[in-house]
Length: 147
Image (cartoon, rainbow, N blue to C red; front, side, top):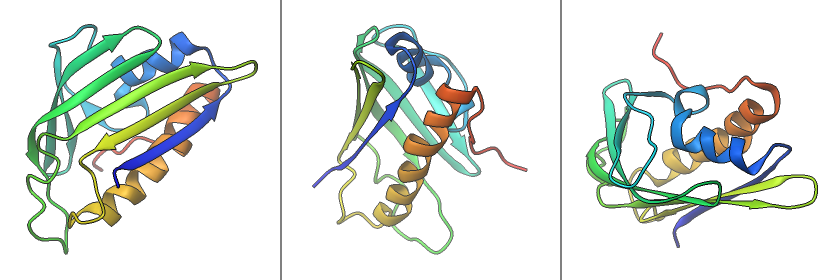
């Protein structure tokens, strides 16, 4: 069972897609590059943790897929998690309805048997329906940044 989360947001499909493609630092955390096409890469930084992704699918306003190509995950109290995200895929889809856009994330490979699952599940459960939604609806998300 892979991690999945969806959220309905009062925004445009274009704005939602752009937030996930190139405005990640406004709702998730510090990144080194925005992405605009297949093959683009970016890293995200959480303290000592660094994940690097390559874009494997880029269909503007409809779908974007990130593949984790480097994983250096560290979390106090957890062991054997460093490379658990390596080769996982994050499928983001954007579906316009009458009054909202439904943003869905399927993190294929993030499964309950991983040591980091509960921490990662809790984090995604905050960053997608709370931080990303707030960023899109109010202009202010709650990304992670080191103090």
